[in-house]
Image (cartoon, rainbow, N blue to C red; front, side, top):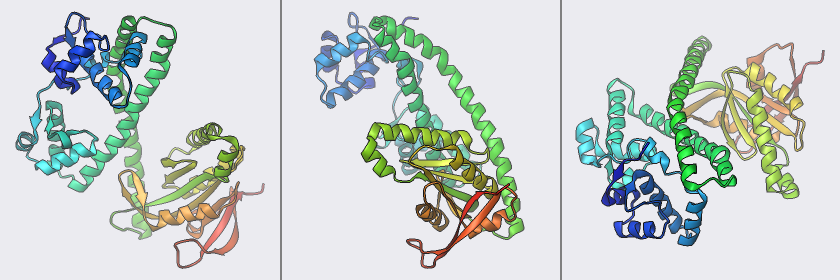
Length: 396
C-alpha cells in the first residue's frame, strides 16, 4: 500500500529536525527519500537519526545502518495515529476538558510524555484528558485517578517495551542476518506489524477483564474478613507480605561474573513466577530480591516452603513472611509492616523460611506446616525484639 506523501515542513515538524538538515540527510542517503517525496515513515526515521547524532554517531555509520536495514522501523509511524494531528495548547485543552492547565500538565507528565515541556498536546491527548475528566466527574477522587494514571503508564510502558524488544529480537534481527534488502525488509516488517497491532488491544482488554474479576472477588472476600476481624483501618489493606532473595548473591557475582549472575536471577524469578499460587502477586523485583503479596498467609507460607525445595541452585534462596496491614499506593505497598518483613528475610539463612507471630496466628493449626521458634530477635529499625519462627514441611 503506497504511503501518503507529506510536505517538507510537515516532515520537519514530525521529526523535530530543520528542513535544511532533512534535505541534507536525504541527499546523503541517511534518510530514505526518493525524488524529494517525504513520508511520515521517513520523518520518523529522521527523528531517530537526530537522536543518534546527539549521541555521537557519524553520518557514515548511520548511512551503513540504513543500507543494512537497521533503521527500517519508520513503517510503524503510519500505523500509529497521532503523529500528524494539529498541536493543541494547554489553555485550549483546559477549556475543552474543564480541567485546570496544571492538572493537565501533571497528568501528561505522569504518562511520561514531553507535553509538560513542549506546552502543547495533540487531539489524541485531549481526547484522553476528556476521558479522565469524565472519570473524575463520575466520582473517582483525584488522588485515586492520579494513582491509576501512574500505574497504567508504568505497566503499559513495560508492555510496549517488551513488544518492541521481542519484535526486534525475533523479526528484525533475523532479517538483518539474512541480508534482506532494506526496502524489502521494511515492507515485510510493515506487513507483519499491520497484522499484529490490531490484535494487541483486544488481548490486553481480555486480560484486564479477567484480572478485574479476580481482584473484585478477592477484594470482597478481604473486606468481609477485615470486618469480621475488627481490623479496619482507612487507606490500609490486610496482606501477607513476603520477600525472597538469594543468600550471598554479591559474592556469587564477584566469583562468577555479571552474565552468569544475571542468568541465575532470571531463572530464579522465572521459577517464582511459574510456581506462585493464583492469589499471590509479584509486586516488584530489585536485583535478586522479589516482593510478593497475597491475601492468604496459609497458601503463601506453604508455597514458600515448597519453593525452597524446588529451587536447588546455589546460592540458596531465603524467605521472610509477615501478615499485617500496609498502605497501598501506585501498585506498591508501604509502611512499618512491609519494612518489618524486609528485616525478617535479612535474618533468615539460605534455605530457610522465616515468619513472624502474626503469620503463625493467622495460620493456626496446620497438617502441612510446622514451626520452630528461634526466640526474640533484634531487628534494625525496630525498638522491641520480634518473635520469629522457621517454617518447614510437617513430618509425615
